[in-house]
Length: 314
Image (tube, rainbow, N blue to C red; front, top):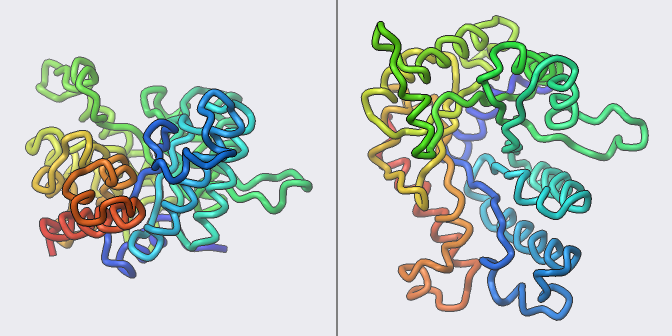
């Protein structure tokens, strides 16, 4: 039986001294010309050619970042775009990243109730239970929508408990319009996001979900948009590791993420996607490495880790 997900994640972060996660969000028309100009990969309107190009790029990104990061976050939407073959490709990448000893977070933001939630939990998170799919590996963790309440999250927690997986429940997101809802205030001054955090901490406190490290396998997606509220959310969710989106291309800076960590430097996994995987579009890397797009990604990943560690409490 593997260790609790939180224990494994913290151990992996410590081993690489990198509390970060690289997001895999591939878009065909942003791929390097070295890939898209290949004869069999140069047709964006052909689903097979486009998907093969995307897979080639993602495999190479995974190989580049594997020595440096403990985890990758694979966004299922960028593969579902290619219908049934894209779903297959999504699971192929999970297997490839898992084989590379990376922890894999499936960014699918599933949410529903009843039997639908149970089936989502089994398809998105659990190891397959079909005899002809015993070589297929599910992700180590997934993101879920928390606004259905416990009814929507519990099936995922049941799988996490049984199979030592992880769940990250949405508490505060990066998109600007979310503030209309998540920052709305009750008469007592509490925000909607803080009310959701209260519920998540209740669910996360189940002793059967907590590892030796003191953290629960139920984490929280928390965008570091406002220092004071982030500090409140950090204090309200003492047993949850934060999955922190918005770094880099979405405008998040190193100083913004400081409140996501506890004073001992644990409790957060900072994610960056476009600023790393498309670093070959950034002139500061192009000037150094010209057409060597893979070296641009490698250096951007190193810089990302260095920036996060420079502000991380120790």
